[in-house]
Every structure is written in C-alpha cells, then in structure tokens.
Image (cartoon, rainbow, N blue to C red; front, top):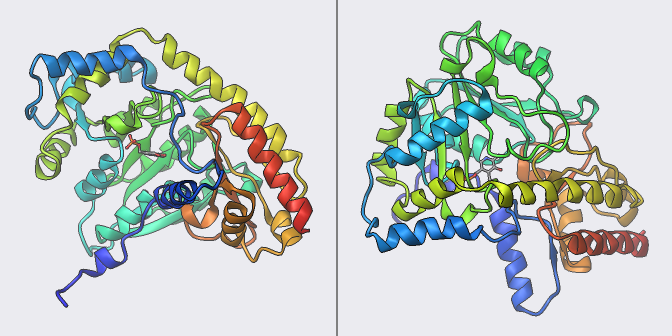
Length: 399
Ligand SMILES: Cc1ncc(COP(=O)(O)O)c(C=O)c1O
C-alpha cells in the first residue's frame, strides 16, 4: 500500500463535525434528536448580506481576487477591528481567508519550524484545531490547563512556568470555546507582562466570539500597550452574522500580513469572491439583525444555565460569553453508571436523543477536574427546554 504520513494518520479533528454526522444519520433513520453539538447560530444569514453576494455575482465578481482579499473588505475590517479593539489598524495589516480557522494553521506555520522544538501554548480545554495544527506542523503542543476552581481562567503562575526561550506562540481565545469564559483586562495585562519578556513569542488572539459577551466587556490583548505588534487578531463573520457556511474570516498583524497573504496564495488562492462582498455588506450594513441575534444568546444562556443546574448530578458555571456551557457531569456519570463523559455522551445520544460533545473532544484530561460535556445553546428556547427535560428524565430513569 502506498505511503501515508504519520502527520496525516495522527491528524486531530473537530468532533463537532463527526458528531453532527452521527446526528444526521440518526435523524435520517427517523430518530428525533435535540442537537446541542455544533457551534453555529440557528439563524439564517440576514437578507441584506445575501443581497451583497447576489449583487456581486450579477456584476460578474466571480473570479479570483488578490490573495489578501478585496481592498474594500480589508478597509472595512480594519475599521471594524480598530473600533472594537480601540487601536489603530491599517487595511495593509489585514488579510481575508476562507474562515477564521485557516489562520490558526497559517500562524503556526509562520512562527514555528518543523521539528525544532518550538513550543505553542494553548488553552486546555480548548478549540481542538489548536493542538491538532501544532502537532501536524511539527511544533510542540503545551497545554495550559483551565480549571473549574479558577472559573476556567488562566493560571498565571502556570503560564509563567511554561514560558521559555523555545516558546513561539501563545494562543488565547476569549470568549472561550468551550467554557464561555471571558478574559478581563486585568488578566490580559498579567499575561501581556509575561509575554513582553520574550522577544520571539507571538500571541494569536482568537476573538471569533468577541461580539457575544453576556457579562462584562470584551477586551483584546492587542489593546494592551506594547502588545499590538506581537498579536495576531483573528476574527470573522461566521458567528456574529450567522454566516458559518460563507467561510469568511480575517486576521490582522502588521508584520505577518504579507506572509499570511502568501500562505493564502499557497493554499486557497483567495477567499470566495462573492462571499467577500457578503462579508462587506455584513460589516458596513445595518447592525440591528446581528444585535437581535446577539441579544437572543443572553436569554438562552440564562435559560440553559437555569435548566442544567436543576438536573440532579449536573452543575455548571454561568458562561460570560460565546454560546457554550460546560456542565460538570461527574455526579451524573456515577448516577447512570457511565464510565466517563464520552460514555455519558454516547448513551445520552442513543438512549435519550440528546446530542452534546464531551470533554475529550476539547483536549487532554486534567486529573481531578472530573467529567464535562459541552452544550451549544445556539438553538431555540424550545429545544433547550426539551433537551434539558430529556437529560433529566434519562438520569432519573437510569440511576
Ligand atoms: C474558537 C474558535 N475559533 C475559530 C473557529 C472557526 O471559525 P470560522 O468559521 O470563522 O472558521 C471556531 C468555530 O467554531 C471557534 O470555535
């Protein structure tokens, strides 16, 4: 059989897509499933955004664009990032790609060398693509454990211990997938103080949920003095404008922009041309639809938090942002005789018809942290109530 690289055989994945496939298969067989597994808005993309793309298509804007993205969109993104991060970002520092996700790979590729023991620090639990890309690109993954007793914030002493002269990239994600934690300015200042001691170190600040803040305020580490030049801001239109399938994301860093643009040339050539016009319409058009969607997540957060905490054996902290809640189900696992969170997840899907993800989908197990599941509450209130009812009833029946 022809050769297959170790890198490919060991490539990690995002289980939200794997479980969604499982859910779709079950639904096709006629099973009624309440799905809390995929992190995408349940709203349709607003019409004025769709019209932006339709107009572009009708005007023949269907060919390649320059790799960095159409100038109008780079300008609009620079303005949006400058206003929301309260810093000055030039359009030349902005690159557009097919989603925010590619920039995780481009960043690791741009600041680490294969097999040189360059280290990348990232949150654990965290978005699974961070560790997967780091390992695939031959860098060393260094998880920073986020603990329940610290409300899933960074342990600054742990970060201090793990930073060294081989550290090349620190990945931050606030609001955080999967815990919903939002890093405040004081925490970011403490992180920045450590980062500024290391000349070779970059920060990738994954801010795709920056508009989904339920409590407190969003702050980007790029706005801390001295940090803008070291920070790669990553954001996109997927979550804010219900545009996950349009695949438009962007990154900003003055020094790395031209390299990211060359990575785009080497991979996708450019982001989808009409889709860039849709993103332009999203950023420059009326914001009321997006604000309505964002407001709905606060109500859903309140509901899911209340309903989950009512269930015997389940406890959770209230997420301050994004649209995920991270219940501790250690007691519930014991009650139903599940060996761990993954066993719990599978049985919940097949026996109760509720799809969630488990903590093993978000990183390595942390001793003493117990079992967790992730619930995406980007779904209707009816689904939240019915899903919680099924979980409660299933635990009662099986204990
Ligand atoms: C933390 C985080 N970063 C990046 C992404 C990718 O976003 P995009 O759809 O823009 O590629 C996601 C999507 O779920 C995410 O949760």
